[in-house]
Image (tube, rainbow, N blue to C red; front, top):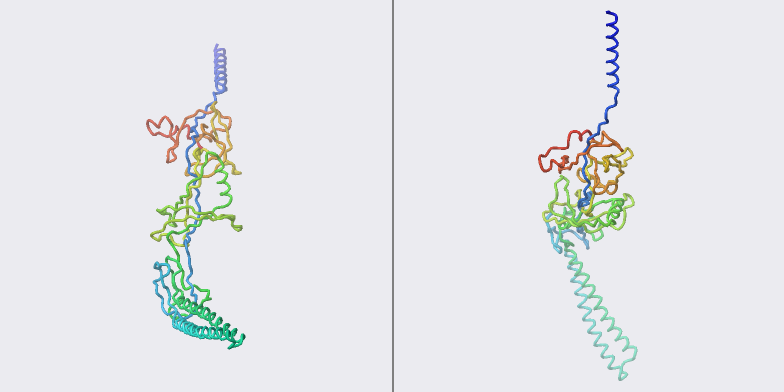
Length: 400
């Protein structure tokens, strides 16, 4: 009796164990991953280019003497503003004044000579009618008169040259602007052919900023402008100073160099800035922002929704109508804050996966939550926009 009871107990335990094993081996239903997406919406975007630039004076003139002599006096204060025509240096004028006086005397002598020659010519002409003089003598008298008249023109030119040299002894400012350090002092000997400038004048208001842009970027911009929905931007230029602060006045893009620098493959662009307070000085290195184009239907998407392969190719995940993940090859133009500016691969209305990508792949079926990105980069569900400001569900934050 005990033996049969033991056998029955063993059989019952075996049946129960077999049932448990069958229950544990039954497959579980597959879990659907919850992800967050946003709808791709075109918006207006100003395509801005940042470039390095160098400040250049709008006018630069080296002050050089046009006659030689001893510098008698310096008549300006270094670093001050000078007007065009202001006398900067006085070269010793005595020798030039003497040359003027000599030229005047020569001219007066020539005028007296021409009067004598004129009277002689008239007398010989009258005597020739009565054969009182020979034809040769009359011709010689007339030629002497003509030579005397020519001498007057020559001495007048010499007098004008002497006066010009006397005026050149006053070294004047060729342009208006700020004058730099003087390279000579009173008592120095200067010459008209010297290579060293006496000083340099620079016009600082307005002032130029020369910017460098690669020829490749210029070609990309032209390709963008060829699209029908992209129009040319304004000529406004913003400026960031060396300390990172923004220059308060806007500049205007004036010109683009017509040739590419063969050594750098870059093109120079020039902008003009007002500089009433003299903040910008020639030689300063700055950064500029130029609004080169405006895209009325730009595709800007969060950077966390675009991924890059080791080779550098970019791609994104979109969710189709059947809530399945698809991979799209995209082309990025530039980073705009925390977004990518996309030129191809995405279109208006696409559901771009932005959170939960690490748990899924192409072909995965997902459960979706629509989100929007705030200005600070935080993702919030669309339903929460009108109520609280909760972020996307935790299930959608499994990774990017």
